[in-house]
Length: 526
Image (cartoon, rainbow, N blue to C red; front, side, top):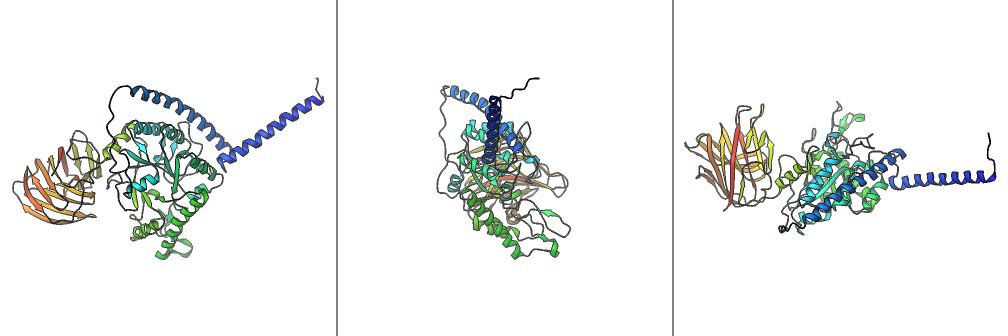
C-alpha cells in the first residue's frame, strides 16, 4: 500500500489539526460564555433546542402577523382603551418542551404538575395578545399599585419562579415575538450551583437580562426546600416554621427564627443585586406560605411579614380561593399571583382573566362570569349552584371583579332547598363581608371579619320560607338593607365605611344537605 509521506501532506494534516483544535477551544469558550458552568452536553442540547424552538415560533408567528395585517382592513373601529382599575399577575414555573427537557436532574420543589407545555404556553400568550393584553414591568406595577400612575386596562405582570433553564430558553422567543416582558424569581443557591442542568447559571442570567425583556427578583437564598419542624423529622416550608435543631434536640427560638429570616431576606436581595447590578425590590414566597399555615409557631406570619417589609417593596404569594384574583391600588406588602394551570388552553386562560376584571354597574349575570369557589362545591353554568359535600356543611362563592363596588342594589332569583341562604355584600374577601342570612321565618343581618361573625340585626318574618324566591340588598358604604321578594325586611346603619363586592353562601347543620341555586342576578347603582 502506498503512503504519502511528503512534507505537503504533513503540513496539510497539521493545519487541519490546528483548525480543529482552535474550533474545539472556541466551542468550549463559547459554551462557558453563554452557559457558564452548565455541562457541555446539556448546554449543547439546550442550544440546539433553542434554535429549533426559535425557528418554529418564527414560522408560526409570521402567519399570525399576516393575519393581523389583513384584519386591519376590515374597517372595524377599535374601542377606546380604559384605564386599568386592577392588575393581574400571572405565575409559571417550567415551560417543558415536547421533546423533553435538558434540565431534569434537579427539582425546585414546585412539582412537575406545575409545569406548562410549550405549545400550551404559546397558545396562552397568543390568546392574551390577540385579545389586547400587554405585559408591564415591575416599576410600572409598583407605580400603579402605589397610585403614582395609570396603566391601560388589560395590563398584566408575567412572572416565573425558580430561575430554571426551562423558564427562559423556551419562553424568550415567544416574548420577543409578542413584545412581552417577564420577571424571573431566582433561588440564589440555584444560580450559584456549579454544573447545574436545572438552574440558570450566572452567565445565563446575565444574558437573560441583556435581552431587555427580563427582570429578576428573589425567590429565597436557600429556603425554598422544606426543613424539619419536630423531633420526628416532619418537613414543612422553611420560612413559615421554626426549625428543629437535631443536634441540640430542640426547636430554634423566636429570636433565632427572626435572625434567620432577616438573613434570608436581606442576604438574597444583596447577593442578587451585587451579582447582577440591578435593584432587587420584590420577593416571591415559596408555596405562597407567609406563615399563616405554620405547624409549630402561631406567630410566624407576623414575624415573616415584618422582616420581609424591611427589605422589599412587594412580596408575591399565590392567589387562593378566598380573595379576588387581581391586585388593586394599595399600600400593602403582599400582592397576589394567579397560578396558571397546566391544562388551561389559551381560551380558558383568557376567560379566567376576563372574569377577574373589575365589573361595571349596572351588571347582569346569569352564570359563569368570574365566580370564585371559596369552599364547597360551586358549579357555574346556565345557573350558579352552590352545594355542600359530605362531610362539609356549607358552600360559598364570591363574584370576582366586584371589590370596588360601593352604592348598589343587588337582586337575585334563587332557590334554596332548606336551612340557610346567605347573600354576601361589602365583601373584602371570603372571610370579611356583611350578609343577609335567610332561614324559614327569620332574617339576620350579619358582619363577618376574619371568619368571626357577629349579628348586627335580626327579625322574625313568617313570609320568609325556602323555595324559589327573590333575595336582595341595598348597600351603601355604611349601611345594608336586606330585601325579600322585593320588600325591605331588615336594615343596619352607621356601619364602618368600606367598599366591597358580592357573593352567596348556603349552610345546613346536616353534612352534604345545603344547596342554593342562583338563576339570575342584577345589580344597579343607587
